[in-house]
Image: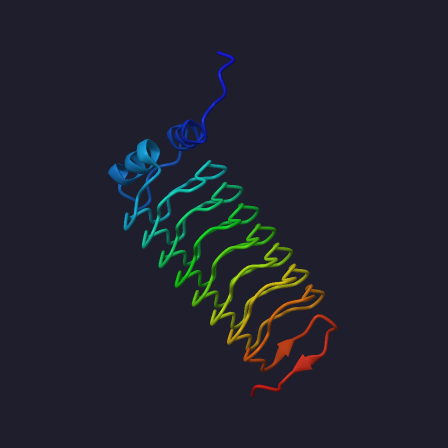
Length: 199
């Protein structure tokens, strides 16, 4: 007692204390993540990792479809090419995380922190990023079609070549953002106007 709890131990506690039944993930994969903080390519479909401490975790190419990662700490985690379709990551901290080429179609990321995250080539089709902090993140070539970015902080973010067709940016902060080559078509801009310049 009295000893500081390590981030890995906190993750183990978050995982082992779950009472919900398995929906599709491999129990061995959860154990591997719990003990090593590494699970590249693992099947973690619909796993519950709510509030888990997984900073720096290696989850490259992992299957996290429908996973519950709300309020999880994933700072600096490697989620490159991971399947995050329909994952719930509201209020998760993904600052500095590598999400290049990840598929986050229909993902829930409201109030998430993605400061300085790498999202180049990521698929965020219809993702909910309202109120998210995405400042200084790299979204080069990201697909943000139909993405909900209401009140999102994208200050200093790189959005070169990003597809923002049908995206909702009402009240978003774009101060200092690099929008070179970004595609705007039926895009709701921060001031409420519709930008069809790329149609």
